[in-house]
Image (cartoon, rainbow, N blue to C red; front, side, top):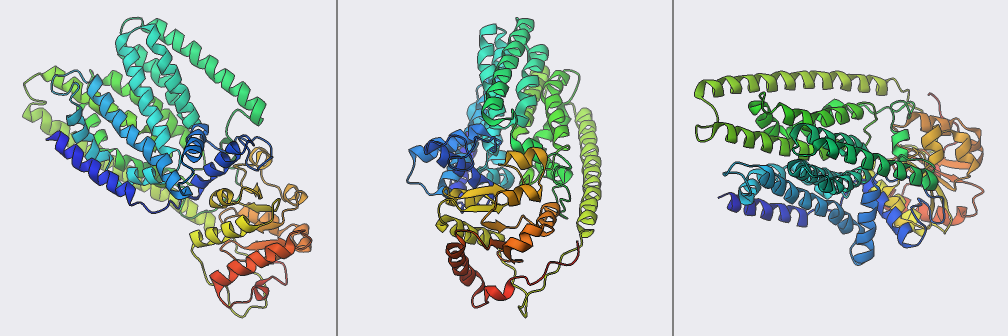
Length: 543
């Protein structure tokens, strides 16, 4: 019966992925820019021939995308990105089934993989949130797969109790770290706790060997990255710290509490099992699996989770909830034998406590999330909008963000080689135009802006030919550009054009070519509206 349910779920899962539309997760396309440069021999550079930068948070995902791009050159970018996230997602589901079946010990559960597939697949493979992350093209599922592998190899080493099984744990931990550096707590702390509390045999020796090996590997990793990139951590680590984006104002987020709430909805079935079965015997499992999770989640509250859609940063912890629930269920089966999981009175009491915890927890999280959201809205409302004077009789009509991205990508794709474009939304554009130099205003791929913050003097020192204004949530960046004398002296500005506003440098050697390209996309997007009527004739009022 479990096998039939699993087969049905797999069929629906495969069909859902096969019929997926192209991803609109703009950040995923940035991996293609790095992949194209690697294949072309430029190394891990954001701009062809430029300096090596640690701009991709997941070096391992860059490697996966590069391998797919090199091997499957006939695939469209959108299909390639789908494969880059869906394939690790499928492997992650298989890894969890294997892990739960292998490390459960009760005769009804041990190595009954069809049963585990029937239990896990309906919850995971058909979850809208999990399926969403399978489709984005991002590193989320790869990081989740690596954590699942880390758990599997660590449990194997802990059960075997020998030193020789520690080496695969070190490899799995390092891969998890490469998949996402915020997996570092899982990669370093989880094996130590697992050997200590769930291990057998030479657990002390295992801890020493693992700790020494992992410290050595991470030390070498840091030296190599510092030498190559000028920093041991990805630029996003600096750029997304709280306060790094001065004046960032988004009334809808990122709200870490709301994103956590989204993720907890995905793992709710496993969370219920964990809460229902928690007792003194299962305390070591809770400590081993959820101390690293708690510390990692705590770290997420110290960063700005921009583009943390659908709990993306929390999702790699999914295997810890799944495997912990499986081990606790196995422990309960072994304890009670054939007597049933609980006596009626005990079951009623546990269910009552569980419902109470869930109700109180849900209300507490909802109220805290609403409070946090209110603060975001107040911060955004405090920003005074700027107004512009143009000859146009009516404002430009609003456009879809993805259509604007597509239009700018076509401009960049046809732009002369060496054209410099400054912007904040750079994924699709970066993948479409490898010959163009892209200045990342938000610092995710620009060491100067990531580590020292944005300053307009540096931007205009580089003389970008085209400025597609930063997303309007980055109020400090936008304001700094608009308050700069070089901007009004050297550029023609079309506020609101292609969603965020567009400025062309008047003395650019590519001015005529860019003007033709802009006019072409303008006509497709705005019809007969004359772009010259939408150029500013005065500096904006208001801050």
